[in-house]
Amino acid sequence: MTTSQTRRSDRLMLTIPLKVQGVDADGQEFEIPARTVILNRHGAHVKIPRKLRAGQTVRLVNLVTSSKAEFRIVRPVSTPSENGGDYGVECTEPDGDIWQIEFAPLENGEAADARALLECQICRKIYLAHLTLGELETLRTYGVVGKSCAACRTETPLRYADFGTVKLDTVDEGWKTLFSGFSRQRRHRRVCLQLPLGIRDGKGGVEVSKTENVSKGGFCFTSEKEYHAGQGVTVVFRGGTFSRNVEVPAQIVWQQRFEKNNRKIYGIQCERLIAPRETARF
Ligand SMILES: [Zn+2]
Image (cartoon, rainbow, N blue to C red; front, side, top):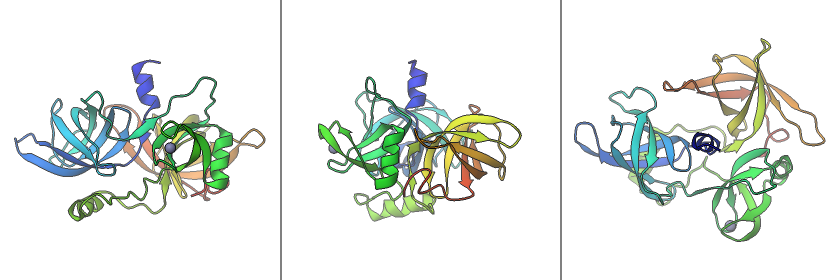
């Protein structure tokens, strides 16, 4: 695997509340709330409400885990305004582990049909874990799956990690208020589940993609294709060994475009709820 392939496969669309400390383009020291949009092992795409320049370093504090590390602003993802923008950042500390997420490698002989962010119910360690359709089925049915936890050194019960309702217990009130004003509230619980699917656009076009996160009302996926808001599509989920593919009519509801590449994030709403039978139990 090349570095870019590794980076792409480690990509995780996840909102983590952050505190950013640094010095802005006018030489002013600042400490402001921010959040991740996408993250990978050593970097992230972060929304920061401050104009920053490429090459400068900032300190990011993960408000969920209180971990902190130095990051370099690699480039703006879109043209930043006076109110800041989206930036690509890269950790400059070799052992920096600000996300506290274990990107589980695919073991020899292990098959993976999907990946999900799961939390060990014993030690609370969070994994981006590979799942077979069988394991996904178990998660759907029981809400829990037995997998080997590296920290517990045994098979333990794992559940979907709950980032939808971030526990900001360790964060003081001022930051909680700041962050709640900055991050939009979600109607449904969202889980990080990367599940392969097909999207049929009604004009004969078919695309293979994967979900980035899933909620009762719909999911997000990324694509280089052009879809417009309100466009009707058909989502095809792969069936298990003994079940047929499942087709769900859906509608594109929002899009976020990145200027620096062709990929777009789309939000999609399914015309009937995809839980509990097709995708997951929330
Ligand atoms: Zn554990």
